Length: 44
Image 1 (cartoon, rainbow, N blue to C red):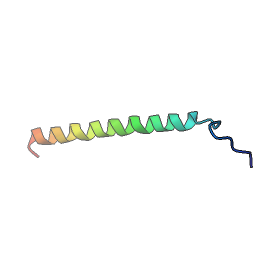
Image 2: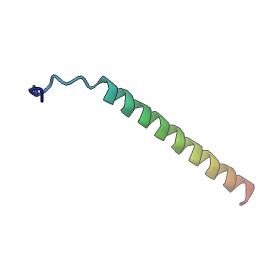
Image 3: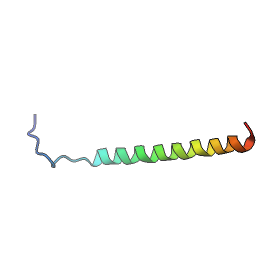
Image 4: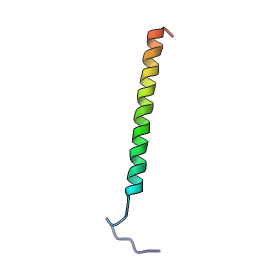
């Protein structure tokens, strides 16, 4: 096992994955809100 040096780990892939997760979560929340507004206006 390689010696671990705190602060030296390459986390670019982790950051890209997290950014993608946040983006998808934001779009999903917006989609849910739009659907709820549509249902409220349609009287469902």
